Image (cartoon, rainbow, N blue to C red; front, top):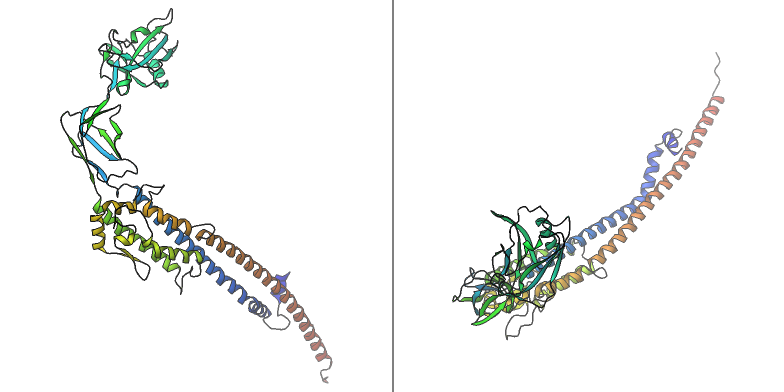
Length: 472
């Protein structure tokens, strides 16, 4: 209906009433809608700015955590002969002053043995029960002594009594030995291997079901006929500073504090020196990388909080973050026990400039690393918390505050999002009101235009009636 009115609007008066209506409506609503749109653009910029700063803060925190826990900045143990002993640091280890000599007199071994051969790995052997008994000594040498642990029975039933099925049953029992099948010129054999350690020697005895003999052929005892005995179960023997100590594994974490030892080969009489390697160059490089990454973060924050065109100039969470960043070099990162050792970044030559960026005094940094390498390392990693403590933990606290849902950037994002939704509603309502006014004015002008048209028609009639008559 309104469209048909608009199409004929002005026909009576000769005035472009459609343009007139649009001009009147725009004059009434443009200021309001433009104000809403400007506010909406500001809010959009604030939402984007908050997301940018939040992302930069969390990325920096994650980078520090990776740096602290990646192991590149930690003092590491060294071995003078890695073909005999390899050394690595245990998590959270403090290796300052590590010095020891090792002699690997014996490697830990598992017992390995193969049963007498059978013709076919898939042919049924017999049914009954196989019993594993653990102890110490050499089974093949006749010196086996049963231990105190209860023997383990492994049933062998009809339909699952082939060599393949028996190996599968032993493995499924998780009894402490691993079963496989090997073949040689004599046939197929059941091969069994224990864990390493002197108490992991074992025997395998068979109790056969009446009427289904055959399991006895798989016996592993001193008197077993046809069995092939390989290595004997034994402990590793390592002399630490001349003191012989035994362990059941070749991977040892409780002989030298903070160090995992992996024994590679036995070498009686050969002394292997343990020492440490301080990551001097990695520390220096990491401090400079840290400063560069911090300055990138600071530029993002400064850009978003700029008084002239920063979207977050009046954002309280961003202001709080700026204050925290300015105090960062003074934040205590470790508590050294040595007098004069560094406690914070400022103590190793990292200072805050007037614009909030950081810079490094190379001489002070070198002196700190040279004089207090352990203390500098502790600034990055002191072994506490999920972040490794030190600088990563300190900045994580800043990041948690900066991204908080109550006072941080997440709270700002929530506030801006609500404001954006309110502005969207206001703009929608303004547009709806605009159309209501346009419709009303269109109807009013249509009525006036109709009356003008009627007046013109009457005027034309009267003009004709009173026009002078002419005589022909």
